[in-house]
Length: 186
Image (tube, rainbow, N blue to C red; front, side, top):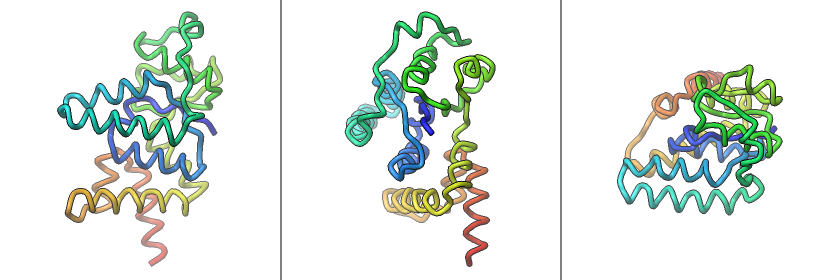
């Protein structure tokens, strides 16, 4: 499965790390563009210049780790498309050019399902997308989430519950599945 990751789902660190960890595990192929990555790094500017510089460095690492994921901008495709927010047309054009199956975004309003369906695409919220990956590959997704959780605890210098970490990432359905799976194994 190929999935375009909208800038709004790669901006939150925990969510980005889980998504890219699942991609690195081979559970899906990410589709990105330089413009999507620029939107993400620009969004971090509100956190200060250090945060933006870190995001720009992470974007370089993403490009290196997933070179096939980067699709060139497609102005020729963009001209024939229309979405409620014209600033999102480039995301749909990248999805078409990259032969994606879906666009993973929080932005449901600006990616109407019927318009995406006309292009053979689905809109997926990140929680549902990751829950579906977990339902087919529970061990792999569980390992990715455990790694991200351990890293978050290490970097923060304190214990963070998995439930609160995933709640902040707006991954409630995935959280319930992982916690139920974990309690079933103990």
